[in-house]
Length: 300
Image (cartoon, rainbow, N blue to C red; front, side, top):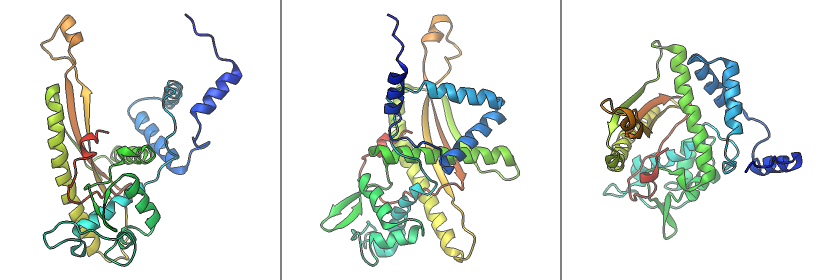
């Protein structure tokens, strides 16, 4: 049965309902992200008008279930994660056995408020505490707190997850844009490990082990960045540096020995892990793993 077209009033009402909570205009960070994406597509061989039409068509195809979860993002959104870095590496915040010390939220050091003041002049206690609380990163021990995870995991909060996804997209595009501009003269590294014929039933186990190896790598990078930053005078020019890891599982090409209907039915998977560096964010999730919550689900 052919669906009867909506009236103009009904269509406007549906658009308004779907867009409720959306920003009426692009902020600077969102516009920068779109600019970066557009330049990457143009350098990949697509006309600007073709890219514009493609974006318009994609926007028209967005399902009604996709609605605003937050209002924008910013490069320093993930700075609160650096609280865990300092907590894990400052002797005053550790027990004699090396475990993280439970500390109060407010007050002089050792406290979460004191850690926040060391992260960034822009990060307020209210913002840092909000992220820690909304993501259930902290566990209460009486009137004190201790991290239950070694990273801030945004998956449980749709607003923070949406904002962090935009931030991360911007960071990835910053990496690609600089490498496309500078080439081999001033590269930001981007490396990947891939397997195009990985068994589907081994993916979950590989992911669990890969997360652990990845966190070991990020902890080591956190330690080096913190040491280098502390060794330089505060008057030195500062920039936002980060190392990021992500993991994907994609449909792979049919095996070369499959033909006809066998090739059409085959759908093995490929796994790819990519590490890259850029100055547009600082990701500092470091601590001691005390719970498996969240980490096994971090697949974006």
